[in-house]
Each structure stands twice: as C-alpha cells, then as structure tokens.
Length: 154
Image (cartoon, rainbow, N blue to C red; front, top):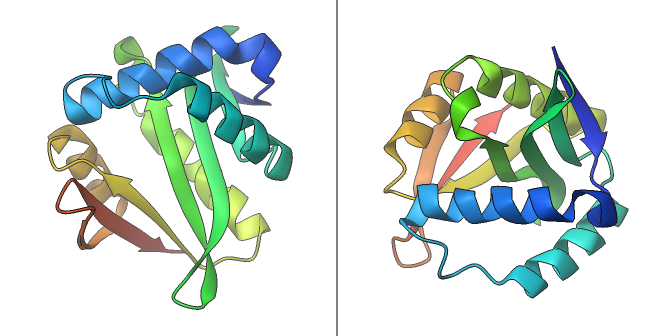
C-alpha cells in the first residue's frame, strides 16, 4: 500500500529535484530544460496552496514517487490539473501508477471538480498508453506540438 506525505521542501529537496529531473529525461530525452531554482520556488508556492496535492509517495518506508496536483481555471471553469505523476524506474509497470491515479481522482473529487487535465510529451509513449488505459482522452497538441493535452471526466 502506498503512503502519501505532503512535500516538505527542506526535508524532501533532494528527492523532488531528482524525481523532477528524471521526469524531464523520460519526457524530453534530457533535463536541459529543467530550471532547478525556479522549480523549487514554484513548488514552495504550490505546496502551501495545495498541501495534499503535492505529495511524496512512499512504499514500505521508501520514497518511490511524487504527485503534483492542483486546481486551475480552464475555459471558464475550475478543473483539476496533474503537474506530475512520477514513480522511480524500478516501480514502473507494477500497477502503482493506477494507485497514483486513484489518489488524484480522490483529491480532485474532494475539490468538487469533475474534470482534470495533464500534458504529456509526444515522445513518452509509455505515458500515453498508461493515460489512455485509464480512460483519458487527447484534447490536442500544445506548445507548438511539444506536448499533448489529455483530459478525464470524473
């Protein structure tokens, strides 16, 4: 069973940086676009705003992943937004991603939103298959084709 612990930047700094950098490598091939200081500033703001949305994921006392979830406005209504679903490489493909997704759905439902979105790199074929298996649908390309927006209705 997974445990979700609100991110404490001071306590979890090394892991959040390592996890986010790895997510860049998986999504874009390298982490050259990763702005460490900008990310930490943004993360601090978001953890204060959505403490149960920005969490470390633990299994058997080990940090195995991270979730970043918030609420934002889109087309005139509030929707959920997944900034990051992340599992360490050795935990991928073991059905833990579904548990992260279930946590996300519970988080969004608790905020009375009925839809959530995320962006995914076209290069990340495993993520596309995972999201489609969950029932998410493509909304369309964004950022000059660098990402694809997907959504799910809850």
